[in-house]
Image (cartoon, rainbow, N blue to C red; front, side):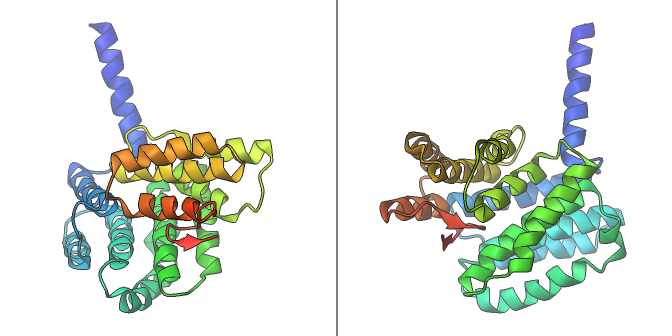
Length: 260
């Protein structure tokens, strides 16, 4: 009985560390956003920007705490940026989300942000960079934000797995070469996918594949790609990465979508 109680306590403690101390209502909304990101990345259906905006309006009109509203709003903006790429409105959305992205930094709630808020903002930076590439833009400062805010998130909570993943993605995008220490830092950042939503597990396969390809461990690179393709056979980014390898290239630049 004591062992069961201890295990339950450990699991509850771990989940609190992963999601932060957020309410059940906020956690349910976060899972809803994650599920829509899962659908988008899997290619199972076309997720529309209106779906992200609907959740955003619910968050803003809710009785959640200001910190929860900030956290979930940023998650909605990231979803919006993701699905905009396939929506046909990516030029207009890029301008709108660009203003939102910059204004968030001025918000007093954001300035006192939790680890979850900064991890979400780092992830938003990644999604917004993808959207920028589809608009033929190279937002250097936003790419730097992937590093800055994932590191801030980890300084506040070293176990924030979402922040670790974005940090690893940033390393792959920006390091022109790897020594052993840098390479294993990347792999370490991407290996822990415990309790992450499916789309982030898929994303880990994609980025681990690119990491291995950059150090010429091609067998491992193709194994990771195969896992991504098995997980989401219709996934857009697995398709793009396979096409990149077929052309003799070693991946994407920063966020998913642009060639090195």
